[in-house]
Image 1 (cartoon, rainbow, N blue to C red):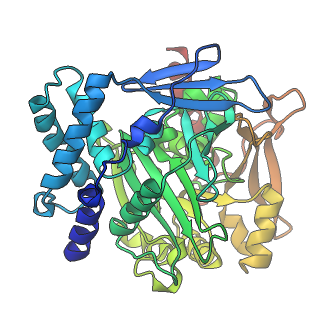
Image 2 (cartoon, one colour; image 1 turned 180 degrees about the vertical axis):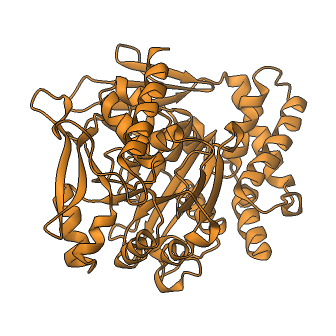
Amino acid sequence: MKVRFSETLLGLVKKRKKEREPQPLLVELLERVSDGGGWQARSYPFCYRVSTVGPAPFYEVGCELLPSAVAALRSTVRDVSEALDPGDVEPLTFGRLVEVLVQQSAEQLATHGLKSRVREVSELAAYEAIGLSRILALAKDEMVTEFFVDSEATSVYLDHASAGRCESGLVLTQRERDAIQTHVDTFSGYTLDFRTPSLKNDLPIGGAILRVSLDLEPLAVNRFALDVRRLNVASLGLVQLMALGVLSEEAAALLVGWIEAGGNVTVIGETGTGKTTLLNALDEQVDRRLRRLYIEDAVETRDLLERGYHQLKVKVDPYERGKESARTKESEIVKALHRSPDIVILSEIQSEEHSRAFFQALASGARGIQTFHASTVEQAVRRWVNLHRISEQSLLDLGLIVQMTRPDRLKQSRYVQRISAVTQEGGAPRIKELFMRDRAGSLGSVAGPGWPSPPEGSDQAKLNGKVALAAQRIGRLARR
């Protein structure tokens, strides 16, 4: 690993040595942001604007460095690229690489006469040296939730928290595409090659955690495809979600109280409907004293250790690794109870193997929160029973199912469409509706007086008490 790391790192940052004429800095390829209306923001040295004039929102990003700062940046990037010694990068991680380059850049910028905003320009120099400065610009804009590239020649398009789906004029250069591939490959512990042309990895860039999914030929017909999602975008708490109309205070209290009473909650929905956002918001409100076990292939849950929560996080190999995987999600689900968790949190149930391990864990007494891809509750049930061969009786262990919806794929609005309970009627599982969103857009209770039967191992009084306490806690937070 260390030899391969050194070779790829040196090859990437010292590429300019072989060039007779230095190429322009990547940030110099950013065009000036136009004046006018629309959404605007700044995160030095970058500026952003979304123009709504035209058939679709258009996203612009520019660099505000003065010519003198650009000259200092160019010299610094050259110096740190030539001086970098891979032996300085210990431990061998992407974060440590950037940290070393930032430190070296700060020293070099001082020799080139830059005295203001050294911290920001040092960070820019580090990412410029490794070919990711324009990716840094996108990472610095917290409103960019996800961005995509479909081929080598097509421009970046993105999802914006305010404007929805936006087009842009940003086209990745060969150097940027090579840099993305190098870092995803080098720091994942796996190898991109003809046999394995698809890879996913999490990279900390500019204060954000970006999940980078890369597809190359022969899998990608157009040779290069990129999907980058901001993982820590799911920072909205339960109170903020209620204020946005994602769910009601009554529904939030039921979900939190149900989990604290020992029940299980599955959040379903299509991609981009806010499943992980809701999972994080619920997790944050559940009693911090409960021991949580997280099983994830991409770490999308919040780090709550510093706030006194009890968290054990296990990172498994991506599902795409298939039979080559040494640390599978299904094996860790099966082993979950050996770690004595009060709550098991699964980032996503993807395959038949995951489902069978998940229901086996439920049958053994494990309970928690998990996400699952399905458009409706009925579709989720059909997928489990017909495709993943889960018995109907096993569905009785599911507890509550929350269906998330994003009504317009080009906009950012998303919300809880319904909350259902899996109950037993005549010895068979039945879906009982608890909350439904009406035509006016309000999420209201349809279950009549009282809550569903309590989770197995609990009783009605305990459930009612937990829901009441959760309602008080959430209500106090909402009134602050």
